Amino acid sequence: MYVAHLRLRDFRNYPRLDVDFSPGFHLLLGDNAQGKTNLLEAIYLLATLRSFRGASSEQLVRHGQRWYFVGCNLVGPARHDIKLFWSATQRKLTLDGQDVRRLADYLGTLRAVVFCSEDLQLVKGPASRRRRFMDLLLSQTQPTYLPTLQRYMRAVRARNALLKHAIVDEAALDGFTNEVVRAGNEIMKQRRNLAPKLGEMLRLAYRNMSGAPEELRTIYKPSVDGDLAVALAQSRQRERVQRITLFGPHRDDLVLLLDDKPASVYASEGQKRTIALAMKMAQTEYVTALTGSPPILLIDDVMGELDNKRRAGFLPLLELARKSGGQVFLTCTAENWPHDLALDLTRWRVQNGRLSKVG
Amino acid sequence: MRSLPPAVAELIAALSQLPGIGPRTAERLALFLVQGPKETAEDLARALVSARERVVHCNICGALTETQPCAICGDPSRDISVVCVVERPVDILLIEKAGTYRGRFHVLGGKLSPIDGIGPEDLRIAELESRIDQEPIREIILALPTDVEGDATSHYLAKRLSQKGVKTTRLARGLPAGSALEFADELTLARALEDRHPLDSGSQP
Ligand SMILES: Nc1ncnc2c1ncn2[C@@H]1O[C@H](COP(=O)(O)OP(=O)(O)OP(=O)(O)O)[C@@H](O)[C@H]1O
Ligand SMILES: [Mg+2]
Ligand SMILES: [Zn+2]
Image (tube, chains in turn green, blue):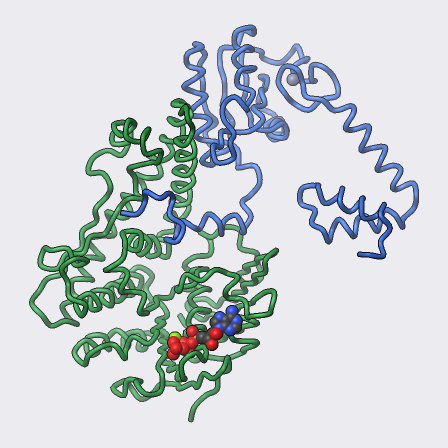
C-alpha cells in the first residue's frame, strides 16, 4: 500500500500542500524545524488518528487558524480516499466519501509504522507504553480487538467511579465487574496469542541488528496469573482502600528480557536503542505477515543515530518494503542522510512548510 | 447578532436547548419562524403546549401516554404474567413493531452509569419490585441495550430480582444502544489507545 496523494490544509506549519507520491523511497531533507516530522505526523494521523508525538488536535492546527484538514488517496489492493477534518466544534472522518461511524471500521485502512526517537520509551518507559504497543498492533490486525478494548475501558471507568463512593453499591459493582471480566479475558487472550509470535520476530530482529550473542526474550505478563474474576473478588478489601480496579489488562506488561534480565533496568543505552528499533521492525513484520502487505514506514531521523552495524541490520527491512510495492518516508537533515541507501529514491526538500522535488 | 431584536435572541437561546440543535440551526429556525406565516408559529406553539400538557408517564409501566393507564397496561387481552423491561419509552415502540410480544412493559428510565452518577435509586427499579409484589408476574424479560452499561444493568437486575422469586430472561441480542455512537464519542473512547490518559492514577506500574 502507498500514499499516492497527500493533501494538507492548515496542518502544523503547512498552510496548504498537495503532493503526489510514487511507491518506494522518499527522502525528506531539510534543516531543523522546517516540517519534516510534521509530514510524517500527518500520514501517521490518518493511520491511527493519533499524533505519534502525543500532540492534541488543537496543537495540530496551524497557528492562528481554526481547523485543519488532512486527506490522502491510498493505493493498495483497493483504492481509498480518506478525509479528516478537525475544528473545536466539528470533527469529521470520511472513507471513500462515507462518514466513519465506528473507529473499528476504519483502523487498518492505512497501516503505518513510525520509527522515531520516542521509541526508546518502549524499553525505558512505563508498562503503559508497551500496552499501547500491543493495543495498536492488535487494533490494526484484529477487527474485534478495539471494540473490546473500548468496552473494557468503559467498564473499568464505571467500576472505578463506583469504588470512589463512600458506600460502595456491591450489587452494581458486581454488574460492572462482570463486564470487566468478560472483556478483560478476551483482551488477555488476544495479547497472549500475540506475544510468542511477536517475541520470536523481535528476537531475530534484535539478533540481526546487534550481531551480539545476547538473547532478547519477550514475555507477556498479565496482571493476574489465574482467573481475573477470582482475583477481583479476592482484592475487594484492597480495592475498598485504594478505590480503583486493581487487576485486569490495564495493568498488564510486556516484559523485555536481555539474557533473562529486565532490559529496562540492565540494558545499556545502545542496547535499549537496538531493542526499540527491533520492536518496530517486529511490528512491521507482524503486520506484513498478517495482512499480506507491508505497512508504510515513517522513519523520523533515526538513521543518523545508528552505527553502521545496526544500520546494516535495518536496511533489509527497507529493501523489503520497497520490493513489495510499499512506501518508505525517511527524514534527514542534509548532513546525515544515509549514503548507503539505494539510489532510486525520490528526494524532497522541506522548507518552511513547503515541499519541492530535488533533482 | 447585535442587530437582532431581543425576542429573536431569546427564541434562539430557547431553541438551542433542544438536543441536536446547534447555534447555527437554532438561528435559522428562529429567523424562519419570525418571518414565515404567522399560523406556522401559532400552530407550532399550540402543538408544543398541548403535547406537553397531555403526555404523561403511565403510572404502571412508565410509557408515554395520554390516558392513565396507557393503552397496553389497559388492554385486557395482554398477558399480565410477563413483563418486558426496557430502558426508554421509545424502546416499547421497537418491540411492538416486531408484533410478536403479548406481555406488558416496564420502563427503567435509564441504565446504571456510575460515570454519570446514575445509580439503582435513579432508575424505576423499586416500582418494578412493587409491581412484582402486586401483579401475578411470573417472568421478567430484560431487553436493555447491549453496551457496557446496559449489560451491567441487566446483570444487576437479574441478581436483584432473583430474590423476588421471578424468572428473568434476556433477549438473545438486546436492543441496539440508544443512539449510534457518534464519531466524536468514539474518539474520546479511543483513549483506549492513549497512554496520556491513564484509567486512574494506579494504572502506572
Ligand atoms: N500548529 C502549528 N502551527 C504552525 N507551526 C507549527 C505548528 N506546530 C509546529 N509548528 C512548527 O513546525 C516546525 C517544526 O516542524 P517539524 O517538527 O516537522 O520540524 P522538522 O523539520 O522535523 O525539524 P527537525 O529536523 O528539527 O526535527 C517548527 O517551526 C514549529 O514551530
Ligand atoms: Mg523532526
Ligand atoms: Zn402502561
